[in-house]
Length: 309
Image (cartoon, rainbow, N blue to C red; front, top):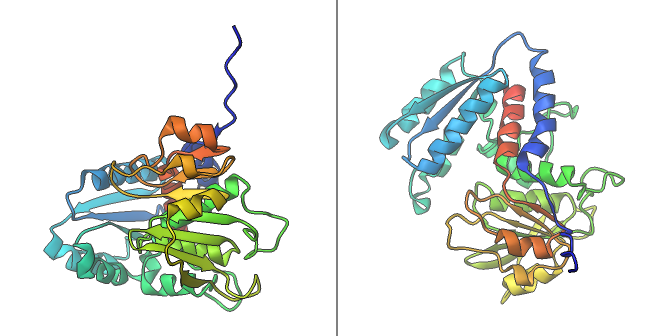
């Protein structure tokens, strides 16, 4: 009886990628004479957010940081953050979203309420402005990097680990020639991720319920920042067959990436808490599959906390 054809897809777990990042954090922490403290705010009653908060607590304490989870009512979150901003014993703040309905805009206000020097999520206006404008440093000497949103940066770190970034090319162009599809255009993850990838030289198809937006570096790789153009009439059937990398983060267990459209040998990454890829099907098409990135996100969070401290 003939043996089964060996699988060619390499499954890479988040813990493997996070290991190196946490080693960097441990080294940096050893140079401080304080134990940085992260305060988390939970105001939505979401079980998934509670799980994330619990994992934040576990990882912080295992790696030499303090963590204080504060469960508050929605109508008290504003004052709670103001108090944490003024508390000198607090070095970083994380808020578990969403708190308010997406259409209300109140979550955006809460993101801007967190003091920039304690914003380890990189979601306040200053950091988002820098990210979208492709301003990578906070000072003219280019010694202090601007904080980037944790989950998008975690995806970047995964792509660097997988050597999708071409280290021979200069910074800012290391994704030149790559085509990426990002399924999700939320303001917290999907849109920032598309901008970051495009600012590094990739052609990015950003897919959401309202269609497809193309993020590129405009007029060639020397353009200072990305540009966005609507791809009228486009959907996943146009994007997936031409993409080197497919990144999906759609919440809910109803959505599945149509793997039959994915190009043979593509890299597939899931950043949703739900499985956006059918495990068996994606392994038949992808060369590399990353089923989750949560542990990388926490590692990035601790790196940002170290900078804040």
